[in-house]
Amino acid sequence: MARETKSAREKQEKKSDRVGQLIAAGTELLGEMGSGGVTVRAVATRAGLAFPSVQHHFPSKEALMRAVYEEALAQDSQCFSEFEAMLAAPVTDAEAAFQVLRAMLAWSCGAGAGKTAARNAALMGIGRSRGPYRASRLWMIRRRVLIGRVLSGLTPHWRSGARLLLELMVGVELMTLGCREHALTPLLNEELLRHGFYVALRQGRPYYSHWFERSALDALHKDEHSRLEIENENGRARRGGSARRKILQAGARILAERGVAELSHRSVAREAGVALSVVSYHFRASSDLVYGVYRFVQNETAAFTIEKEYRHGPGRSPSGTSIFDYRIGAAPAYIASLEAVIAAAHDPEMADFAWKTRMTRGVYYFYRPGETERFEATAFNMHVFSIWGAGSTLLAESLWREHKIAALLRARLRQVGNWFPWSDAP
Figure (tube, rainbow, N blue to C red):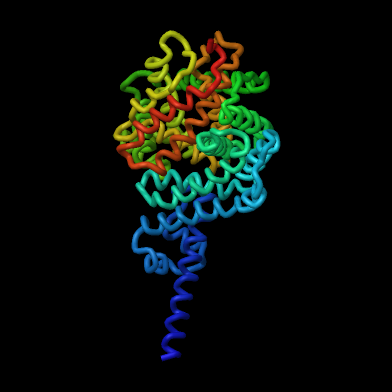
C-alpha cells in the first residue's frame, strides 16, 4: 500500500511538473509574441516536451490559454511584493508617495517589460474569451490595494484615487512598451504620472509642456505627411469602391472582432473579397498591415467622435463617451485600437507607429493640418485623459460582463472627466 501511494504521488508530481513547464513556456511566449505566438506546437517546443503532452494536459487551446493568462497575471502581481514591503507604514509626504508610484511604473516599462507585455496580452485575452474573470479581478484588487496604500495617508479620496491611478498606469504601460527605446519616453511617463497623481488627490491643475507640444506636433505632422503620401500614391484610397479601402475595412473588422492574431494578408484578402496579391501590393509586411488598419480605425473613430462632440471646437471637459457608439462589425472600435497597441509591444518594426500613436492620443481633436502650430494646457489634459481611457477600457474588458461594459465606461468617463482641471474652466 505504501509503495502504491508513493508511486501515485510521484506520478502526480511528475504531472504537475509537466503542467508547470507548459504554463511557464506559454507565459514566456505570451510576453515575447502576444497571444498569437502561444500555439500548442510553440508551447511544446519551448517546454522541451512532445506535442501530444500539451494535448494530454490541456484538451483544448482555450484551456491552455486560460492557464497561461492566470499565470501571467500572477507573475506580474508577485513582482510587486517588494513595493508592498516598502509600504508597511503610511506615506504622508506627497513627493515620497509619487516616487514610489514612479518606481513602480519605471519597473513595469523597463526591467519588467516582458511581464507587463504578458499581463496586457492576458487582460485582452480574458476580455475576448470572457474569462477567467477571477484571475483578472484578483490581479486588479492586489494592484489597487498597493496604490491605495501609497495614497491613504494623503487624501480621504484614496480609494477612488487608487482606481484612477491604476487605470492611468495601465494606459501608460500600454502606450510605452512599443516605443520604450525612445529617449523621451521616461520623461513623458513621469509627466503623465505626476499630472494624474495630483488629479487623484483632487489637487489637479492645468499643465503645459513645451517639449510635449513639439513632440506631439511633430508626430501629427509626420502622420499627416504619411497619409497624404499614401493617398497620392494610390489615388483611390478615399473612394468607397477602392481596393485599398476594402482591405482596410476588412482588416478593421478582423482586428475588432477576432484580434490581431487573426489579422494576416490571407485572412484580409478572404474577408475583403480581393486577391492576395492585391493586399500584398498595398501592404508589403505584416507590420504595415497592422499599422494601416490601426490608422484607418483611428481616423474613422476620430472623425465620428469629432462630429459628435467637437462640432464647435473642443469643449471645456470632453467626455469622449461617443466612442462607445462607434462599432466595427460586431465589436466596439476601441477594441481594435487596444489590439494594435498591444501588438506593437511585440514587434520592433512597429516602434515608429507606437511612438506616433502615444503622442497623438487625444490631441488630434485640437489639430488642424496646416493651421495648428501650438497647443494649450487643455490639450495636455486631453492627452492624459485619453491615455487614462485606454487603461480604463482594457481593464473594463477584462473585468466586466459584455452587456455591462459600455454603460459602466460611459459613467466612468464622465466621472473622471469632471476631476480633470480643464484650462478654460471658469
